[in-house]
Length: 112
Length: 113
Image (cartoon, rainbow over all chains, first blue to last red; front, side):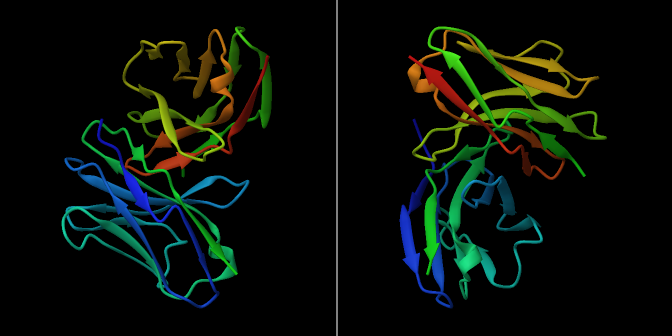
């Protein structure tokens, strides 16, 4: 059964550094998402991507964040200058037309 | 804006018994989707069940079923014959008209052997 994959599973970085989180969505899906979950808190929407462009983004998704789908299979989230409060699990999800979002295993980002 | 509320931070149930997790939501939309996701200690987010608001029939997926009360904006999850592997955080989520999931705070389910 196809699944969403994410790499790395855990990323440790120093404050101020750039990180790129990678996702491979399910191939015939149309919508792609990034969510984050700070430990012990709710899951929060960051951004959605459809037809090769951002369709929606939350207030969290400021100029420090960007997304790309560089080659038709990968979907990346870049954080330009990480802050301590960016430490969280980051989930990628993809969705076909049936409105069920399928999640990857997550990348745990630790900013020190 | 839509909100999702899970009023039970933690629930426990004896193995093989039935447990119901509560979820309420607030929306002005008439057509939407609701979901329950399970998050085990691995933190993977796993889809458990979904409900389309336009369907009156409650969704069922093996031991998992929902009680969807549209007028009351309630969407509870019933787990029958609880198993040790059901222990996890359970999140209720609402898919809004922009196809974003709005999440509840989660309920931690403990299964007692």
